[in-house]
Length: 104
Length: 159
Length: 275
Image 1 (cartoon, rainbow over the protein chains, first blue to last red):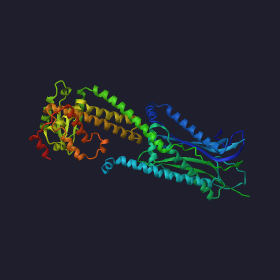
Image 2: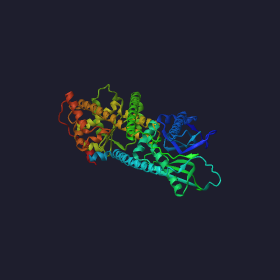
Image 3: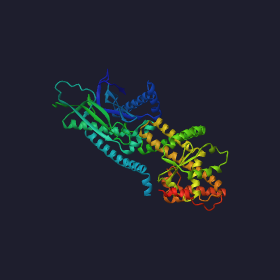
Image 4: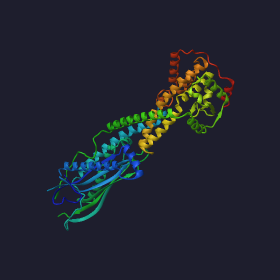
């Protein structure tokens, strides 16, 4: 699966469109991580736990989107956009969408 | 028996609301999905992409902005589920269908608007999500999210 | 470039797990978490309580006693003195300066506060019919001191609030849920303490009067008003019926004689009727 965030796959020609595909996931951090983040907030610095969590979730959102594209019979997703929203206190939604296409 | 209910009124209320939330929430979700699937199939022919379209001169008759949005709330049972999930972390499954429904509904409404105005395709689609009520899983707050879909509808010149 | 409309029935964005199954897992997990917290709390509180010297406790007591609008009562003080005199001389309780105070309130209750203050509500005094019953109530409170329950409860309460705050954040609904569950387990713990204090009190009563007459009268009366057992599953005190049963079992096991009770003497009768 080729993933790009421009309107085409450079060097290839889009032969078929399948429409919008999207993948999303909502993740929460467990309270232990919340606690550590609270302590880390006192001294500043990177919250490794959270970075990891968001990275993992974003990957899952992309995987879900690719899965949907695969079901369409596409071999690429172009013009991918990411969005993050906090759906609930302590939980973040990671969302990815793009256009499923077949390229040659 | 009645005494027991009165003395543990909090617990009793909690239980009742959870049962009510679960049954009503499940029925509402099933019905909503049914309607979403039906309408999605109806509007399947209307092409939506999130790329900027490049059109040759004279092909496009008219283009305009279309949008659709939906605010969907979570039921009491699922809210409890999300609160519990917050302790352990991981995938908050209770919110997945909520978001999925509102986003698909928003796209559908946008498509319906485009169809009503005679559009042939929608280009440059963008999706946004926002929370209504800061903390959607707080017990006394309205737990709901808004999904917004917007894009440019294009009407072609048909020969 | 062509557009191929296709419909896919599968939905990759929603997990397949049934919500009820997830709920069961989460509740199970929460229970495990609560049990672990409860054990840690119990362990640390136990450790701390045995280490606190009585002198530090006396200072704490000053603070608590000020919170009650109470008056010294010589009649009650005399009853308590009588009980204290029957205590063996090596008892650690002799390090305290016990003060019994009366609080005007309809509540049927008595409290053991840190530092040797015993607070008796006038509502309780009205319910008491004999010297022996009163002696058991006071002996029960002394039992709390003997087990240092008043400190333990304070320590656990503090630990509970602190732990819940640290783990779940000050104001989150998850925290409130877990705290409520912890409180339920706390009440179980406190019921155990009450039963222990009952048993301790009974022995002192027998030592003082030479028989166990009147030991169960007070709870028997309370049991009539208490009603169903079910609310007591989560209460901080055991159901009066259970307390009566336990006391009776102990009386039978130890072979304590049961003699006729002494009716309440003049100086305390007036306290009750002032209301």
